[in-house]
Length: 279
Length: 275
Image (cartoon, rainbow over all chains, first blue to last red; front, side, top):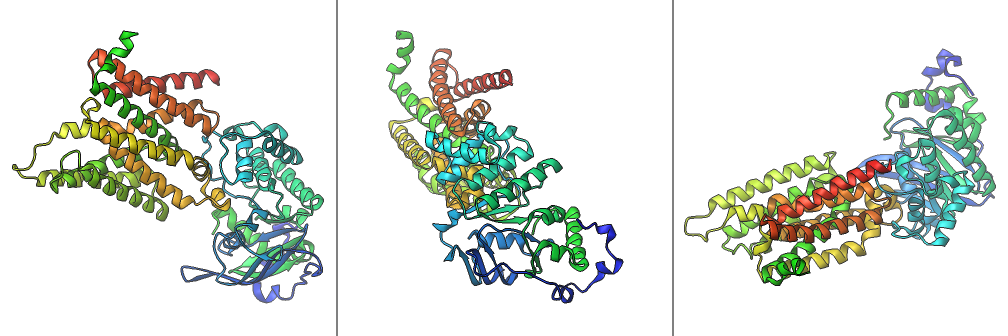
């Protein structure tokens, strides 16, 4: 892992865009099955261009890290991928098909801020089965419970199945939300800052777990994070966004090995420490 | 046995029982969602909107009983306005409700003040505090029909409403029409509150929404359990409260609320003992 203090002083004042173009950016093998395709996607909200001509794609089983500073357009990109906001230009395809309500079920999502009321009377199994049914369960059938149990067991959280959500630790909550994201056998999982509010040990375990699931199930995953140290160890590819454009799209070692990008990335990380709110 | 059945030989007690149980049941079920959504103050705001609507109806020459038909759209409009403010601004639910609460009550006071000495006399006390024992057969039927329809709608949408209340973002991703459901919850609560005002009065109606739901929330392990417990507390409170008020010759609505409050205290103790 590159340490910020070891960076040359000039690296902090580089011309970002011109330097980035000089980077080696290894793209995925185009012959691999595309799980997600963004083709010249632009998104404007209230007349303001948030994403500007973004193109990249994710092959089956690849673990991609999406990073960039506040206001880069990461959240907007996630919302566009999940069909919450439409693309103004360009196309987004999931498994080669345009986004529809029917194929959106193939995206599993672990949100950044767990927006639920901690006092909501619910158990882990209720939340997981809600994702399965698309509505909150009144009574859980045996087959649904078994499916929730198997999914939780896959991520080492079987004992959490009947636990009230209110009593879960940060790491346990993440496991339950991860199980929720995996219950519909998705082809793509989106993890929006999954390690926020989780201690160092839990963070490591969670990323390791996600990497292993991604590899064993050939599951494509997008991880949005500012913890670039963790990314270097886990992600197979990095997509770096800035001002709504893809600045870099390549392998972690070739991107983070470049002092220039490391500087940009750590500036972003430092910026987030002071302004944790997402755009 | 006679002791238990005697009060209900009277027509006014039968009307009170039917209307009281209907209002208590639907208020308790809606209350589970309203309280969970952090809008415990909502019923208070809407009951004052109902007061404003009834006052407009009276000013336009309607009788107290018919003014409800003006109050229903007025209160529903206020509920939608609260929903718009909640969704479009950063204001919290209590602030948004508080603004419309004051506005509606001011409208009510203004329109009551505009009535002349020649207009039909009305009892503001009856409007504010209600009297379930004095409701006519027509009002009882309105209360019953509105409560049953609202209960059917709420039960039919329970699973989607619950998901939307738990986490709107996740529910939206699962295809739940969160915004529509939220407006539907607000307008259903508005209509129920207007007819409840006819039976228990402006001041006391929010207790019927909040207390059974808050009591159930402390002891229910799941939202489904919480809903059933709230329904039981609401309806049992209405029956026991009416019965007690008959023998003690006390205000029926107030006695029902005191029974609900006793249930709240019991839930508090049960929840404490469980820890």
